[in-house]
Image (cartoon, rainbow, N blue to C red; front, side, top):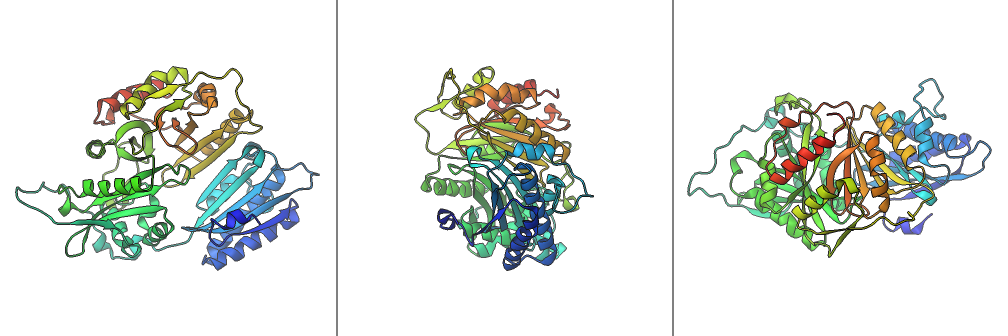
Length: 501
C-alpha cells in the first residue's frame, strides 16, 4: 500500500490482483464489503458490484495482451458524498478501451459489456490516462441522503412569489454575515428549491446531508446572511475545485424574496472573496445566465469580468411543479473571472488564429499575456494524459488534456464518439495554454467539431483555453442576452466559429 496516499485520504484500502478473470468476483466482493461498511443498501451494493465487474473486465480484456501476466490495483476510499473506487493498471492506454467496448447485454458479467453499464450503475465515471504511469478508472457512488422533499411537506416548498418590489426609502433590514453551519444546510436546500425548482445545475444543492458532508470535508465554504431573529435570509458558497486548486467557483447563491434589494448578495459575495484571499487563491469565477442580464450585472459590480461563453450548457427542461419557466432552448452561461493574485506574467502558447480574441479576453481581465513562439521540437510524451467527467443532470461532459502524446487525436475522437452515443448534449474541452501542444492541436480538435469558447485562468495545470462541442443542439444566438460589450463581442466571435451555424 502507498503510505503517502493513506496520509491524505479517509478510510483508504487497496487490493492488488492478477489480470486473471477468475479473480473478478474477488474484486467485486471486496468492494461490496467496503460499500456495506460505508452504509450502502443492498440494491446500491449490487449496482456497485456490477460496475466493478465491468471495470475490471474492461481492464483485463483491453489493457493487457492475451498471454500477458500482470497485476492491477483496486482501491476504495470514503469520499465526502459516498464511495470512491479506483482501478489502476499500467497496460495499454484507455483509448483502446473506449474504442473496443460495445454494449452487449448478452455477455456474462466478467466480460466487456461497455462503459454504458458502468455509467448506469454509479454516479460518476472518470477515465484518466497518466502517460507512463498507466491509467485509472474512477467510479463514485453517492450515499442515498434525504433530498429536500423528504424534510418538508409540499406546501412548505411552494415557489417564491416574484417579482418583489424594491425597498421603500428609509426601509432597512439588519443582517450579519457568517459561515454557515453544517446543521443549517436544510435551509440552503429549501431556499434553492423554492427559488430554482430542480433546475439548479449543482445537484448536491438539493441534499442537505451532502452539503453538510461537503462543508465538513472542506470542499465548499458557505456564507450566510442572518437576521437578528436568527433567520437565514440568503446564502452563497465558495466551491473549491479538485482539478484546479488555485481557483474556486462562486455558487449556491440565493436570497429570499422579502430580503432582496438590500445588498445581501453583495455582502455575501464580498465575504467569500475575503475568504478566498485568506486561502491564497489566485482567483474566483462564476457562471451567469443569459436569459436575463441581472446576474451578469451583479458579477460585474463585484469586479468579475467576462472571459468565456458556455453555449447551451444548461438543459432546457421544464422545472419541477412549474417552479420556473421552461427555457426556450438550452441556456448559455457567461463565465466571469476575478484575479485575487494577478500573476506577474501570463506566458502562453496561443493558437495563432485565436490570438487577437485571447488577447482581448486577458486585457478585459486586467492581465497582459506574453505570447510564446512554438519551439521547433515539440516535447513528446509516450501517451496523452487526459481526463473525462460527465454530468447526468446537465447532459454535459468535460474533457481535460494535461499532456499531448502521439495518440491524442485518436483518443479524443473515441471519447467524443462515446459521449455522443451516450446522448451527451454539450462537451467542454479544456486545453493548457502553458503547453505548446495546445497551439499545435487546437485546429485538429476544431476539425472534429469543437469551436472556441474562451479562457479560464488558473486551470488544473495552467490557464485553460476552452473549446466546446454541440451534439445536435440547435442554438438561436439572437436569444442570448448579454450585459457587457466584451461579452457581446465574444458572442459574435463564438458564433462565427460554430460549425453548426
